[in-house]
Amino acid sequence: MKNVDKAIEWMEKQSKNPSQSWKGLCQSTCRQSYSMGPFGSSAKDAWSNVNKKFKVNITNYKDKEWWQHVPRGAILYSVPPTSKYGHAWLANGDMTGWSVDYKRSGYIDLVEIRLKGWASYYEHTKGYIIGAQYYSDNDGFFKGLSQGKWDQKVPPYENVAASNEDRTLANAAVWRLSCRLADLGFGGKNWNPVKYVQTYPVKAMQSYNEKHAPNMEDKSQYGPKAHDRIFGVK
Image (tube, rainbow, N blue to C red; front, side, top):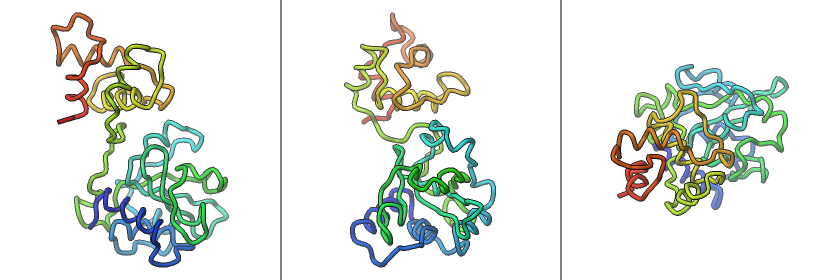
């Protein structure tokens, strides 16, 4: 069985050099990307058939924060009441996903994860799955899928440092720092950083440095050592 990276790689290769027409085969592409056998003749059936322990239901389709935290490698499902088959697409991370037919009929393309051009599918998104009882490895959970807030992308140190210098600056780097700190347990229990809204996380950094750099004079500061430790940079 393939892991998340291999599943994404399969989607990218099929997008550039398709082995067949993928028209109407949304569920098939997602399943094949993980080398899974069939678990429903359509996306609608698949969503119904997958065990609830692998499901994460959507809160509100207009909630951008929810979409931002769909993990890379998760399979999303939409089941509009008027649709016989529904739709499935694969999260790529950073608010993008791989979908058939959305940009080009019969092809797989990297698109905006919310599929706003298909209003009915967008509005009737059910949620996503992080595994399936039909996936034989890793107790059914997709291998390599991160369930935390951080998207596994290490931000450039200089971009985080810029947000430390100007604490009104909201960039992707400081959002990733905030997500990583939240995953590590620093910050409020229900803290959900929002990309391009989140500014420098002063309190979370203070809590982090209290533990890892107790002798710092100003524990709100961010430096190269903290960067390497927080993001596991070698």
